[in-house]
Length: 251
Image (tube, rainbow, N blue to C red):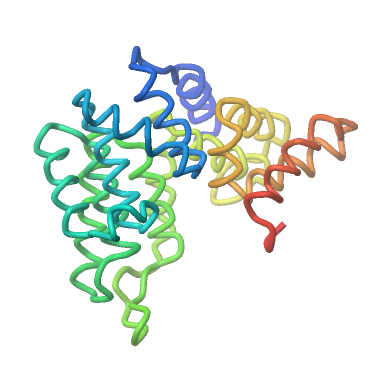
């Protein structure tokens, strides 16, 4: 693969990520939702939904679907209705969230798993970096039903790499982090460049510490090791601490 091409693409993507003008309720709701502090996100999301923000409606719906909002009595029918309303109003984020919910928490059938994947593909094609990152994981790990182990999606490394590259091109920090890791290690067909790879992972970390720590364990671990071995233990320390917080049994 052309390593330099992807470095330039991802650097531009990471540097280009910026928040559009939003209300305080939308911004705060998203911030706490991304941090998985759903109790803090809830009041802001409710107000943002009342203001007509459809992405906030999708976040609230996903919280209801995944049983993070006890006051809604785990009403998954209501959650799906809210997601459909947000989709009808033009929210690509809602398509991604419906795909995520259907795939991760829906009925344990091959048909439902495929519906979830199809929704993620639709969202990815419409520009969602989150959907592309989720598809990277789908094809990296494959999907089976829990009950009988029926293969729903086979492991496909070529497709996994296609989607992690796409996530990076769509300004996704997870895409940048994982490509940086592949470059740092010289794996998955990428030319090895330790310094360039580590710098790319560090840029992803600096953009959003919490999202990085939650979603980028392997690149984060590689970054900590690189920084520590290059005399930058003080820079590595907060990264390591947050990774341990989000992954206590894995780090």
